[in-house]
Amino acid sequence: MRIGEVAEQAGVSVRALRYYEEQRLLGSTRTGGGQRQYQDGAVERVRMIQKLYAAGLSSRLVREVLPRCMNEGDVPYGFTESLVTERARIDRRINDLTAVRARLDEIIAVSTDPSHPQYCHPVRAGLPGTA
Image (cartoon, rainbow, N blue to C red):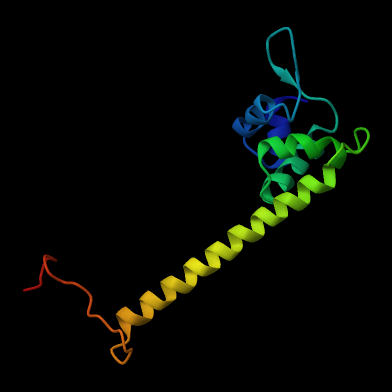
């Protein structure tokens, strides 16, 4: 199967397929004319790669867990632990972003509600059309 066919069937760009090859996530052979040829199952593999990236995994971690997700051999040592660690990292990011959102909500409340005890009028000095 040629690169354009895989890209179309998997719903990704040709550029993405080249990137997956660079990251050693996907393999191809070359025809005599230099065109990439992919084995049967390439579309399924690309879809799995997309799912793993969508789950927030890095290329390194995708490379580590992809063979197991594709039933290509034994479960690597630390497979589950790597995923649990990644989930904990994502949980920390969610908590950090939630705290940032709460701070932003407070700033919005202070700057838009004149009855708020800490209300501060937005700075207008120097803006066009203000005196």
